[in-house]
Image: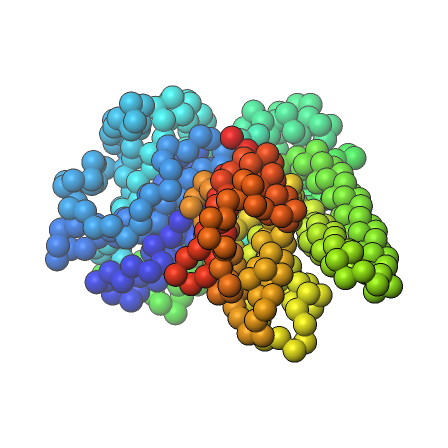
Length: 489
């Protein structure tokens, strides 16, 4: 559900508060209505409306994608809003070629004297026809519940989980008897041992938690949701009271002091969901994720052990060139270990490339830069999330490019700067590594003059990332540019 939020409409403060309250309660109403709900605030001086909120149903296919909220439009330009509002009237629209049934509900001010907005209920015509064939009891209860939401009477709805396509619904009337039961609800209660119809039976006769939940919703006039085990299954139940408007006093006004006591509950909806399979799947997934995290943790530890052994070997190697090769290998191994470290903390399979870049820069700064040199190293750009495999490849690429800048660009300098910039192009990513070092020699050809590190980068970018790699002198020094798609083409 989307709510208007940042738009400052020219409305009284109490009207804004009411619209914000309704917007919080629209999601559960959209689910129960199996329709998209659009909340409009009216601007009388302009004869215009603002789209304040939009709720998409979880119980059926939504009609609209996320709509742009806060836009003003003339009332006459919004279908069915112009003229006198008849709640029972159904308007026919075409939305992306589909026939849509639209009903309009007015939103009144606190004194019920003026229309300050509208709630539009849009559903595919087939869904509307199915709803029209449902029990009259349910239709009246849903309409009364809708009016309760539009008065701002519903409490606790923002904490409810969505009502899904395969969830059941009951309506318990003011006499505490079950007056309506959906076909899905009947099937779910059969799984609890109730083979016969429950319509007409008192809710207290049902050996479930329903009675306690209904009484709590009635007494406290707010929504509640519980999860219980019964019959070897896990059930999620919601109790949603339908609060009637307070009685009006002299001249049709509501008595303020008696308003809270005057509100009474006309009935309660019970929404029931079998969560057994979903919870079992979730527990299995969590167990697998824990195992995957443990594997990544052990891989990271093993890589760090290998790096430590190579580092010890490098310290004991008298040959300077061999020692440098071992130190480069240490950083390559640690750059892969960085990704496994992130995966050991979050095994969902996506890695923040910016965090990887920070970690690699810190490792290289500790391992390769001499204490008597001042090399400033920075990482710039947004958070970019990539699959683990591509993040590993990027880690190696960044490691090689930064090492190359230090060993060649800064080889004969005591001060310098190396910047890593990440650019998100939407479907692709660029990694720019720039140094203000000595620059490339004249006539440098990446295809023939590249040493091992640059050859590794070129091969990984072309073969694994399926991207492009360039290296050239720039006004600021040498710049390496790697660009690749976020996912394999």
